[in-house]
Structure formats: structure tokens, C-alpha cells
Image (cartoon, rainbow, N blue to C red; front, side, top):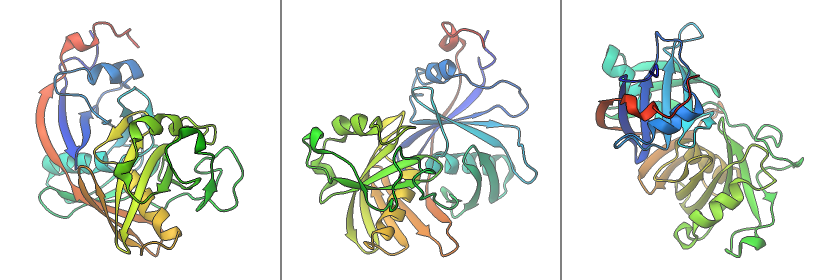
Length: 290
């Protein structure tokens, strides 16, 4: 029987970004890609990202968190999922501030309200090799790319940002006018992106606000993407379109993004607990033991 059978799991969302939280602290098991895909087949458990807590690796942190996309691949960062983890840790301990570690680094979480949390997402990486891009680009605020083959009327350049995962932000007049379910997969796997990329369409509505649609690498079109919102706010400021404090409106709701003078990006938004369950053993019946 799988080590995951009958373990408790929480189904949550961060402004519509579908999240599963699984606590494996105290266990040695590491979720495989096949197991991650299997969990997403559970009743009501389809997710965009799954946040799996492991024993902390660094003093002062609450957990080391591995992040899985629904296709079983790993993500380096998930801001909406991190807020869900913070809510879960708060329910356990009553504390209002936590630091968790992901592959992208340390993330400090601070409670702002009963269901609202801020996450310090760290400083964005803006160099071409850090994002990463496949070509040496001096100015990643305006990266030329051939979009004519898409026949979709997209701009011929994007802004590259890494928030622990690679993002390409295209600025458009109307995000809803573009079929991201068609263009997203093609751009995600474009040769420009050696590790694939999250693809965002951003429409700046004022110097303090923008609307956003995101095709997430390994997950597809989502109601919300926390790291994507951070990347879009950073990209908009780099292009001189907004200030550093921006309200980002996604299909699932709003996130407040503050790119502070110290370089760190602070993301604030709400979370919701949908239900609690246990992972049924039959989910793993066709998964080969690790």
C-alpha cells in the first residue's frame, strides 16, 4: 500500500488558484510525479498546485515545501499556495508569522486577517540566464520574440522575470481578446524558454492597477497565479507603466503586490478552505511503488 494512503489532505484555493495541502512532516516519503498525478484524480482534488510539507531543513523555518503541478512536475514557487500553507500552520499553532522554505528560497508569511496573508516572495531575478532564457538578452524588460506564427495579434516582445519560476509577460490592450488556451501551450514550450515558462497577458488599467490572465507551466490556464501576479507587477514597473504598489486583478480575484525599495516583492491576498479529506488508497493502485 502507498505510504500516502489514508493521509489527511486539505483542498483550498487562493483567489481561485486550486491548491491541495499535504503534510508529510515526520515522514521520509517524497511524493513521486506519478503519485502527484494520482492525487489530482481524487474526488474534488483536482489542483493547480499541491503543497507538500516536509521537515524543515533550516533553523527558524516551519517546513520545507515541495510544490507539484497537476502534471506531476515540480514548481519552484507558488504564492497562492504558500498563503494556504500559512493558513494551515496558523490553525495548528495560532502563530501569525512563519518562514517556510521552497526550492526557490525562504518565504516569510504574515497574517493580515482571518483569511488574508502576505508572503514575502523575495527579489525577482531579471538577468537572462537567471530567468532563464535561451539567448543572451541585455534588456529583459523588452525581449523580442516572433509571435507572428501564432496569428493571434500578440506583441512581438515580452518582459522576462523569474519569481522562483520563469515568467514571460506580454502587455496587451485586452487580455480577454486573446485565446490563451491556444497560444499558452505554444509559448510555454517556445525555444526561448529552456525550462518552459509561465505565460501572462497583462493589461494596465492605471498606474496602480492591471488585469492579468496566466497560462501556468505544467498546470494550464488558472483562475489565479501568485508568482505570475508578482512578475506582472514587476514587469509593468520596469516598463514605466505603473508604480511599485499595484493591484493585480485575475479571474479569481485581486492580489496586492508591493515591489519594495529593498527589492523584495510582497504579495497579499485571501485564501479559502474548501474541504478536508483523506487520500483514498485506490488512488494509488496503479502507481508503481517508489
